[in-house]
Length: 279
Image (cartoon, rainbow, N blue to C red; front, side):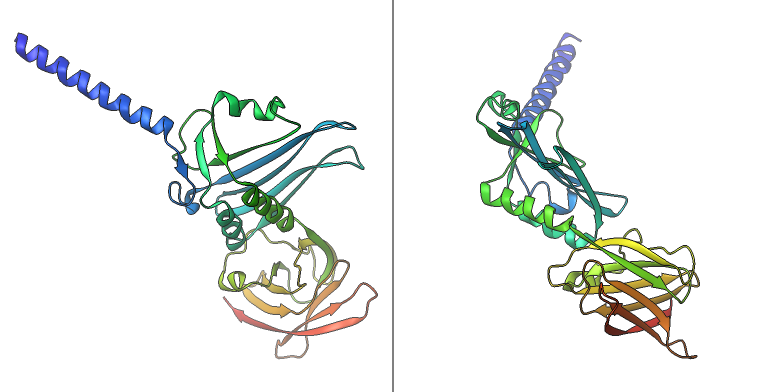
């Protein structure tokens, strides 16, 4: 009986030691983004850069991308010197755009935060500093931070700032009540069939609505629409700029569709052929 008790105690001690080693290794592990965690596992990335300003005091800019419920978001929280306040901009983007930004931080390190690291955003180290963080389902508890080199952080923040830029357009639907998406014309966006929340959803046929859509440097876009009758519409927009107008309508009795593109002066710039079919 005594030997059995000693054996049980010994096994318990060994299990406790093994568990302690595993916990210690996990809590002190340095994770490499792209390997562990994989890019597809990451649900949120946040990068905050702060600095002391002689005129405005301590100011900061935050750049965040995130995903939930199969939707993808980008958000900036930037200090506007003219307004003297923080300005938050949040947009929904496509999965390819989200993954493209994520790829910019591949190879960065996610490590347990040291006491020295924890003081960075408190302004103890220098007049400018940053803090970065990622989230994924198996993220260890405790204080951790993401370490990026300057090229990586610059590329990431620029990409988030670019993807949150928008242009304002007007849209008239003379077909059927519908949900409309205006996407950047990229090879990746051409391959997807899930576009997130509709960017435009007119209340009534024939009404003109104003909407913010993603900014594209080359001004080229993809038009996607699904009406309330289950008809799918698609086409290419060769050029679309801030202040321009779109109108979709049937050009004959055979339900052939056309999308007209007008500039800010009302001049017709393009007549785009629109494909349509029942889903």
